[in-house]
Length: 252
Ligand code: NDP
Image (tube, rainbow, N blue to C red; front, side, top):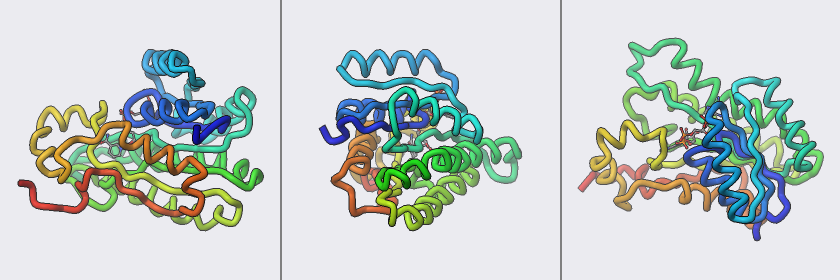
């Protein structure tokens, strides 16, 4: 077990990619605290699913956009499970729309969740990891940071900023034994991509050199590696996990 007795926080853990990561971390022996915003049924079912598999996962409701609540929930998690060793920032949203019609609320929600949430949880945890002189921070970015899609100025800006933040924080924490990396998924089959899949699923598959959509497990496997001792000499990196989508090959 590669994460035995490690305490991990996974934001946005109740559904999609985060859910896959919670299951993978727990299967590797971690005690996982996951954060969800409002979908209590999804959170409860994940707690039960992990317990059934013999692992430990606990659900904590918190909106990642709230700085004070992030601090409070991290304290509550440490009281319950012990000192945090791994932080995985996954919570994210889209509010797609062409820029000229984009509402301020759509901009703010995406930036405050995808970037603000990363700031809030890193701020709540970084000093704790630095004091332990070891730890892992993993941020979920997106290939959309570098490969632009129409209607995603807000999303691309948030994920580009997550990449820059990841590299900058990595430099600050490297001397303390804390690594900071990001995973940039391509097109993954989750609730977030349901609308686009319904409209253009076959076309998207053609654009992916591996000819299949990604699954949460594809991302979770890389997250386990980055959370484990095996990745000890890697920091400040953005790892694309996209079946080759970002290579920009002509669809055949
Ligand atoms: P989903 O929409 O399937 O799940 C989102 C998760 O984030 C849910 O658990 C949700 O909680 C939680 N969440 C959303 N907003 C908040 C908030 N304010 N506070 C706390 N939790 C919140 O998304 P995906 O699994 O598809 O995406 C996960 C991450 O991966 C995101 O950062 C996304 O940008 C990124 N990504 C996804 C890709 C894809 O193709 N799917 C591609 C590239 C990157 P609740 O259940 O309570 O609503």
